[in-house]
Image (cartoon, rainbow, N blue to C red; front, side, top):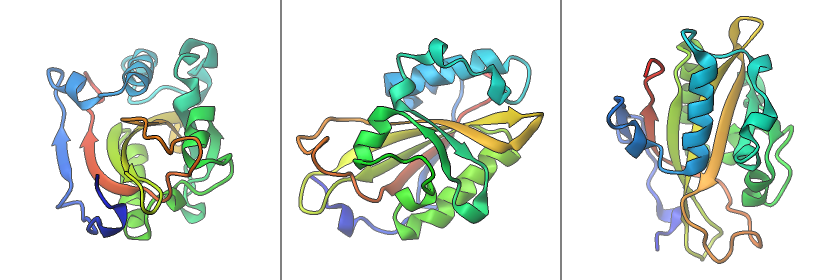
Amino acid sequence: HRDLHSFPTRRSSDLIFAQTSSTSRGRALKLAASQQLYSYWSQLRGARGAPERNDIDPAAIRGVLADTFILEFNPSRGFPVRLSGSRTNSLFLRELRGESFLELWRPQDRAETQEILAAVADEAQPFLIGGMGGPTGVETTDVEVLLLPLRHHGATHSRILGACAPRSLPGWLGSLAIGALALTSLRALSPRE
């Protein structure tokens, strides 16, 4: 049991960071939703740095659709959530569409999260980030967040496809909101695997 509110402020130099290789990718992506979405995204990408937004077929990812989201690349608006799946919404106990993705993180982690989102678009670089959250006074849970660049009419500074899922199912899930997430780790996933 960790107390989220006493979790220290982290800087990128403090976070776990590793460029994954093809032999360690399976260990980096721990949850089925992340693994399936990353595999689908990789197939669509082919030789490109990122697939086009219009290439995404919701029917092809129906098994993980409830854990997925799409962000608009708009730093001045905090990277608004364009679409979010039902399990992602239930983690926060509200519809996330239109909300700032940065506002889902603790204030001291928002600048770091914004830098990660910029790297996703600037470098067509997929990232796996770890978060931790939980209501005050109860056990916390770790959350796995996958961030994948999407092109829209050739530009990567338009949309980001993602998945968000808890690594465990605490008893409060579904009745209490997870609250603001603490950024605990990040991994750059090799886009050419």
